Image 1: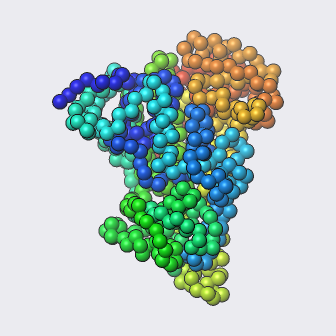
Image 2: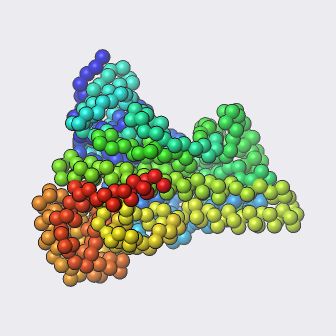
Image 3: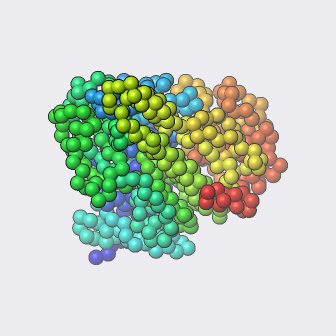
Amino acid sequence: MTDSISVPSPRVLIAGGGPVGMFLAADLGRRNIPTLVVERSAKGSDQAKVMQISVRTLEFARQLGMAESMWNWGFPLDYPLDNVFLTSLDGYELGRAPGAPMGQPGSPGFTEFSPEFQTHCPQPWLEPIIEDRARSFDSVTVLRRHEFGAFDVSADGVRANVTDLETGREITVDADYLIGCEGFGGSVQVALGIPVEERTVDYSVDLEFLAHDLFAEHDKGPAVRYTLVDEGGTWGTIVAVDGTRRWRLSVYAVDRDQADHLDPHAAIRRAIGHDLEYEIIRQGRWKRRAAMAASFGGGRVFLAGDSAHCSPPNGGFGMNTGIADVINLSWKLEASLQGWAGPQLLETYSSERRPIAQLTLAESVRDYHRLVDDTASTAIRTDSPEGAEQRRMIGERLVQDSLKAWRPLGIHIGYGYPWSSIVCNEPGVYPTFDPQDYTPTTSAGFRAPHWWIEEGRSTLDLFGRSHVLLRIGDAPNAEGIISAAAASGMPLEVVDLSEKQAGPYYDVPLVLVRPDGYIAWSGSSEPRDPGRTIDTLRGAVFNATAKALALTEATL
């Protein structure tokens, strides 16, 4: 039977309540936007994936009050985050990329350019943190054990069918916008008919097991990741899940037809090097895929996270890219619902985020090949001069490549949207992008730099809710920009900082920052036409040149 929904009618309907969908709900919640999340599972995933939470995701979590929970969930804070390459745990060590514990200098993702740091928070612990924060807002409703069904789109909104999986009751939901966060091949993406280009990288099998004292079984010491290499090359990794007794062994390049028949005990014995006591708690095969939707949606319906792009886990970019998607989308939805967005604003979600998703996808595929290519060696496990030399050569290369894979600061905080039609900058004057390194900049389109205004308070803490105009030092009063924003209805907070408070990276006196923390405009004096500048930033001016460039970038 069909009933009207028994929860407040949402302005935004989210299909899929994984980390990306719940993060979107949390950000919409702090904006007081009525939001409904529909998720078919009864609880969050217990599968140990999504290990690495990037520094940029932690910055967004900081603004939502979740960062500390992602750090303090229970992983030992003194646990070294080494990457070790070896033939087996009781075999030869090929090389080691040392990693200090979370948040300490030398830790992966640690940087002076952020108030936060990369952390290790696997999905079974991460999901409840995000969901609890989303549910803490009165404007957010979460329906678990409900399945999202067919939907219709009109000029006024979206009407969707939702089924209660416990009772079979069908519910009709009316919303202004629908966001598909269901994962790869989700129903929203399929219904929209958006083409998806997919390439299979390999088939892998994950084995999660409990071993109460694995460290006593080898002499390699604690590490967050042990990569296994033998005569056939790199064949798997053991990852520390909780830092004490829960581990995940991933076996690479398994024949698709044989993956379901992999002997888990033989694989664990091969990885450890000998028999030991353990308990297998999960086994499953999965496809390591590289996939990209031709568009991330438009109008009333959008895709985010794995629904829009799906990358191998190498490098840890997948979920982090999805969370950056929804932070980009959330404020644009708010602007549209509040009535101050121009007709182009929501359309820039796809043109801004799709090129970045392509960037991270390509990097994750490169990281996979850095790990597995040219690692086969006939003598790698022999006690001989030839074996020692092969181990040295392969180990040195794997260590160097691992630094590229797990510490690419540019990928996480160095990218920007300089091509965007809602960014005002000098055409062609963009900072050089380096996937590995980051240089702070006040160039329009890029992340506003971090600097400690005072103890415990970062410039990044100023951003997140509305556009912010920073007036630094003896900056012009910028009354033209302030008046133009007010006339358009665009919320604008003005913050005055001394040059000392702003620090050395804010090298111009006027910096206008979007709610997602990216610079929309900057300058030494007001623009000649403040009204047109504000109209550009809110998507009310169709910039044909910038739009064409954005579309070109989105197809690269």
